[in-house]
Image (cartoon, rainbow, N blue to C red):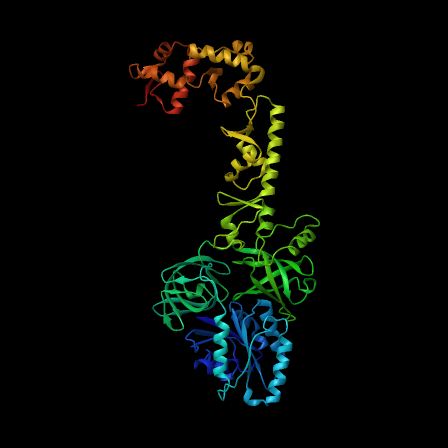
Length: 596
């Protein structure tokens, strides 16, 4: 299946030609048929000699309806450019050529229509004129067919030519769904129906989709799926599709809205673009209209240089690297094309940022440069790179400058820089505070501003450090308290012999164990500090529980003190610690019991 949009000057016979090819009336409105003037988009379809189906989107040619023309050409991958053989190239022919060039459409057929009104010499004159005018537009190599829709001459050749051209166009059915809506209406008993040109991805009956409007974002279910008057379970590109949606009314969706694969598109209001046609950005109005798909959005354009600009949209759209957009000045009618280089660009806050950004954009690959994006951020989730259009759904080749870790693409240079900073910070900490176990995980995150905890371990390894107990330390750092180590060993030996004989403050002073030393010992799991200055071994609570479990339940504080062979100064904070762990339960002021 294929979709072809028409283009060309008003009254050059586009609708007549579609009617002759398909036997269908593309003009949908009575006013169009009465005036003989296409105002809105028309749709018709037929079968080509090869058996392939082709649908036509017939667009208006009059300059007053250029916005409607853009909505028809915007999603179309192939164009049938029509020039009347008797009149030749006209003003609106140039406008439509500029739109085709701006959209980057490079597949099409040029038709010299109304050949019955022109002499052979005139036909050849117009043919040469058309070739000259289409130079550099993307259609300069398109085949040219001379046709008369009135006599039928050339129609068979046109059908054969369309067959050949369309057979070379191979869209992707595995891409994400992005269907720009060109019509919305209601069918009695069925509800909302929308139509559009499916150019990538696929859509199935019963599938849940996301509907993005100018001021809303909601989900709906595809109740019924049609193309060219036939019901389908699945449709693939390129197709004209009609979706009967359950979950919203036709009043809630209109031309310019878009139907998406849920959760698979980045919505953006900020673009960095490269000019592909039209005036330099210094000559583009600050406020203008952006056309993409069937949408027309007011935007602000900030030139970065003559070829690159920052575009701010008035509403969010699902755009990605490589998308083609059209910038049109409604006042002058000037049309320019642009290629999206970045759909999530960095802010421009400091003096000189615009010039620096322009220099970066000059070096960026038009197809998207994942290495630049990852280097700018340091690390990016692979899923986000897919949303940005920098990584395809197929298994991506990973550049040498990038490492893949836990679903993240990490810039090698950035990780090395993180590792160096971390190594310096830990070394300085050890020199400044010999009692410090190391740099805490939280302090590491604050220092390096890593985008995720998933990257901590690899950065620690890059720095040649050790992550243990939530702290990062040098691998060769001796475990101990330095000058206070001897006093701690003495205390550990005494508590091992008498677990509940907590030392008094003066004894701790004699051992050289002040608050900082005790805190360091606790961080390394060598001591347990309870309230009221009580210091025990970390094994003391478990030892206490074995003794308390053997007592008659419930037991008193006095009974616990006697069983443990300690003092009231020690037993009260110890019992409160056991309560806090849920190992014992306080029943009243004087009784507790072991929790079984």
